[in-house]
Length: 257
Image (cartoon, rainbow, N blue to C red):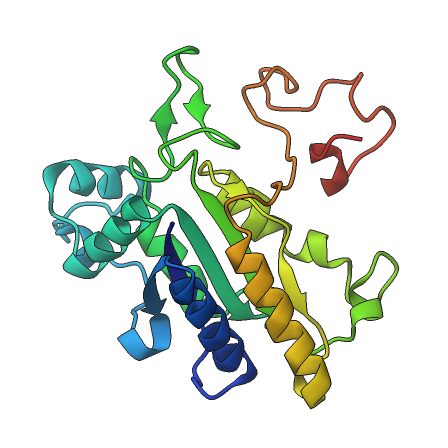
């Protein structure tokens, strides 16, 4: 298995850094290949600009169409092309970050903004249904696997169904469903380390052991069973049919009962 490890923490000596290092060692010792994109170490630029695409500044900058044209024309910036090549070559993507303000750090969000471009990660027309695109379980990246690894300052119960911070699956929904599943990845249940700023040595060792086990099990772990867009469960407006999850609304309806 070839793994692209996407790491977004500014301090390599952090809890995140220690967890990553142990898990990467476990993968390599098991014979897997790991390619690292350490965004802070790379000095990754998270900001989308017209310069990414060799776009004429005299023309209106419409990001989606311009990026798709640049992808076809071969005028994307070198750093974006390099990350896209890593994505294409990898069987699995590990996305690791600390949960800041209920979401990804800006540098990580900017990686997705600049790398997951139209024509590469989305905007692919479904040949079976003209006018409908391949997404939510389909697309260029279908068949690959993704695992989210995150640390959070909140304690475990506060990230539960009735916790003040919100249920962790819903906090990660924009990334797991709206980004990774959207572009076709099979998304595995996340590894979440709560109470990250107060872990004891024993708790760290438990978390590190869990992460090592989870990354080694990437090929065999059952993914989160999100509904596919084009599997017949949504109408032409991409609204879930009434007979599915009747009387319910919210993010949970996009998972089978």
